[in-house]
Length: 155
Image 1 (tube, one colour):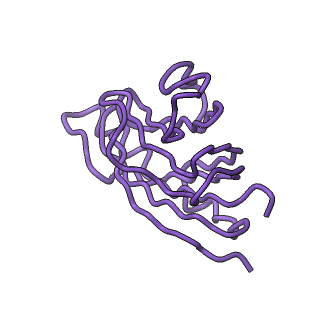
Image 2: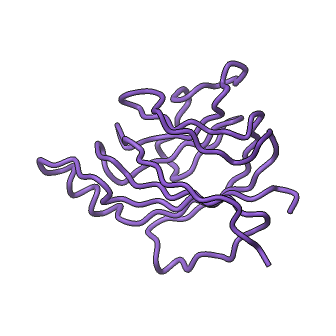
């Protein structure tokens, strides 16, 4: 049975409907955030990078990260507005949170003590509320929430 190895909560400053998670040691990445960001998909990938398209233009999203020792149980899709899975290679085992507005943020997500291949599931709720705030005067904090689950690709 799959077990959670690590949990972390970070805030992602969303700008232009987007934020990303990128290899913390990004000097050797062929495409650095936000280059080649695809706004047409909820979860996009590039080597060492995950691109996430938000429902709102400018706000602060709550991101709950879970690292599992094997594939976690599936999330009930009824509780989420969007869900997607992808593969990710991390050379360092650490990912930095990136914003379209402010660049690299202070938070670092620790997957492991060293690099490896990962599977990731991203689930999101609150997209319509974030979009409505963007249409009005507010930017909102924690209206849009993400659950990002990582597990070793070979598990």
